[in-house]
Length: 160
Image (cartoon, rainbow, N blue to C red; front, side):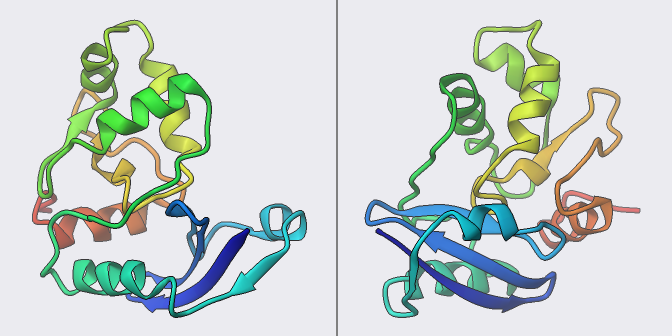
């Protein structure tokens, strides 16, 4: 069974989907939820999702540095490995796609790490916005570069 709610945030309306295990999906304002939502029967449940909403709200207020809500990461083994490493990047820090590939023991998998980030089903909580290109440029972001800049500025790791 899946449960959902929405959260107004400084970056727009977030759609949050939870399983009985934990957060399964955060749909950013710029992402289409048509394919995801259409195939699923979900129940709206603001009570069950209150902890994740509270943590996201605290994050956007700058008072939460590390998420503690359980997640239910549903993806391929490689993407799971890469995203688990991305999840280790501390608040206010960044790492390159190359560094992530090296940390997971596959230094030639830089593009695959980029692909894992591009398909991150739980953005913000799994902080793929903290992954940048090796030359220090931002790289891409599913929510768009302005959103990535906003999140990095919020954490104090982007000064321009």
